[in-house]
Length: 579
Image 1: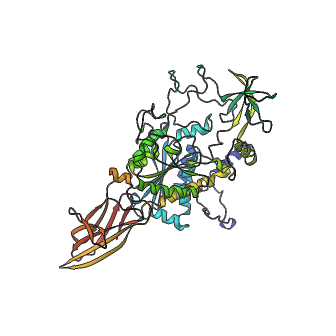
Image 2: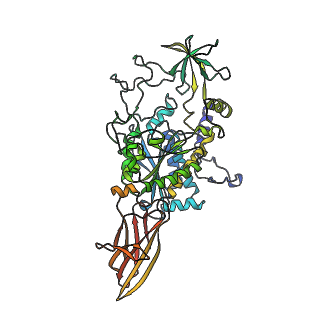
Image 3: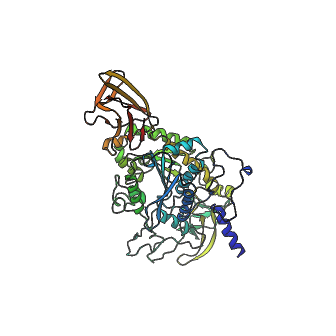
């Protein structure tokens, strides 16, 4: 009982829960603040581990409860198994209308085993809220922008990956059941954890005809024998992933849960399963994806987006397929390139790549739906790279073994041990555990979270930031005045991406004047030469197709009356400002 109570107490400490009369923080005079980290946070979270769907939900609730003026926590929908898809809306709710601020959408964990994205999302919400009021940059960001943060859009399979028998690469899908081997049964031959270590590793068997031997320098490794090699060492054959033939069809682990791909389910350049493996019957078949799409469609203020996957150390942009090349306009690619290339600097070892050209073809991906369908500049980061194991060495086949031994005290590998298999007889089971390889090791995790968050913040920083930079009046005589306003966009992104302009996805920007009687309204094409384009219908409310990044739009009205004019700029993605 004493050991049991100790474990409960330790668990409460790890997730930062508070017990009556017990403080897990420290007095301010007992700590020295590290640069770039919150000091004396209201919510203490350990960022050297991963949390289940329920753990993420609890952490998101704690952040929201601790910062009611900065966070609203909502459910945007339900997963297939009925879990809430939790979103944290983070901004300074006391300043401005949150629905009219430029918005940045972030999600993670669409693939269930690609878990780091959820922790990056939680870290982002935690970092923004704990630094608000202390760090000027963060305070300004939350005054001007709103973040829509969804830690996991695949909570069902996240839990399956963590709690059930899996490899480091399974499951990739959600938990909707399918008959993968077409035998009339559903999910009847999944993965098996025969040795009970929590992971599905590998099986090997001694065999005079095997073509592998144990590495004499490291008993964890297997070395393949070449056709001309002569050896007296014990030979082994490799039998594949740990498991048994549960349904007696002569195959092992062939009908696992799911095995569709949630990232082939989006309604842009979608293709059926026989063309794009992993696609379901129609776009947005996955309930969580439908919930995200409905939210995005209802929030035209979203100007930038970021999705987090693993692994390989990549900053990815679309198009997913070469057939979609024409979607990505050259003007928008300059914006993607500027942000992506900055990301390579901020994320050492990461490469800025294009999906179809540098990875593989993807139809119906989330990345392309956000940009192609909504005109939202979007990146996908593949979290973690083996470059991080030994930053000055080229990765090789020994690197994982060396890293496990030298930096993880052999914690990532299950030693080979005998097992009496019902089909293969006497075998051995062992190998790397599911939490190693794709998932960032604990001691490296917080840096990974911070750097990827910083990249997302840089992206969000360059969403449109509008101001009415200058207003000039000129007396024309006869009771008439000329009012000229210069509208400035201080950031890289325009108020409408080229894709948005091409398909008229979002309404134009409106620049209006009131408080006076408007006789004429026009867009100034050249201020020096006096070239204008008049808007003859409703001249008080000028329609502007786009306010360019790092650029200006100049408008002019001829007005009468003695009132003081009030000018308003109303942009779906650029916000609402007046002067």
